[in-house]
Image (cartoon, rainbow over the protein chains, first blue to last red):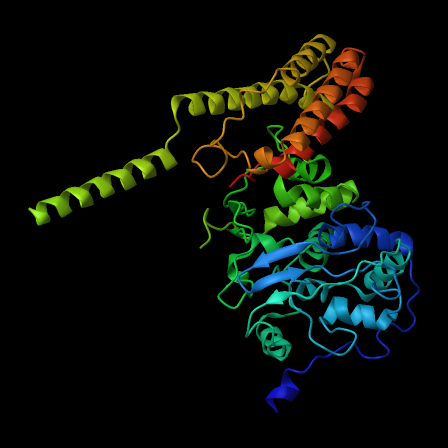
Length: 280
Length: 158
């Protein structure tokens, strides 16, 4: 019974029926969802999703997989439904739970149409035959079956911003909460690695050990909406410092969005609750 | 006597440990001056790029004379020899600097990143007085050169 409740649940077989992929929109979804920030080859061209980047966490080291179009090492041979199940449900090709270093707890709120478009775009990117490496996780974190319980505790399709009254706020919420996965870094985690939604975007320890990841609620971020939008476009802060560390890679993505979308993200950040300057 | 001797050894050991700890968290004068010098240079960079950036974002009107002067300053700053800036023991493991150990581990890459900034600022200085569009076009690569270095060689703020 316990196993049944926490078993991997892929998308239903008809989930993508009737949807026609639009790879052009897929390119925008790819940028907004920040795929390249984790999956790009360390020393390869910007469009080679060979994986290999290492992410140190309290649970061990996660290694980004090859999601290039290669049929053997990459996703070339996966069906659309298999890919959509991985992205939106955190279920792998063999029906196994995937680790939430992959932000499917964000992407589960995405429009299925956007994911179909994204997959079409992904298939158009070059192939890499770089072999995948296993994650380096200690017991008990290497026991995938336990992820079912983790998902039951921490994966939700509910929005954090429950009331989004304007189209701009709805778009901002979608970009931040369903694609951009800003919270994966900017929100503190509990002992089991789940996001603390009551501390939404109020900053967190940096797992890499370099300082802290900033609080981006009004409690700490005093920039105006145009200043936030400009930062996401050019990387310049209001006093003309530039984005550094991991955020530089994020700006490479957000710089590809439209001005309207960047303004929506800024409006969203100004509309969420202001939290105290330092989150635990 | 043996007890007194033990006390002396313990005291000496404690003093040694204390002075090592002191050396670990406090910079020598040479180190501090190098940190001050490079941070002063970053301030000057920021002061000059701020004027240009505000024009690029059209927060203030374009002024050819101000733009040309600020761009010339940036190019001059980027040409300053930095050999004495990067003293051993002044990376981000000590208080008060965000200079990552990667600077020392990859001095060749760091020097190349500085050379890229020098080139971009020289290009900017050549056209900054020729109108807003020309300045804007040459400003982009300067921002990119700043960002490349801040991504790899500087500890993020906060």
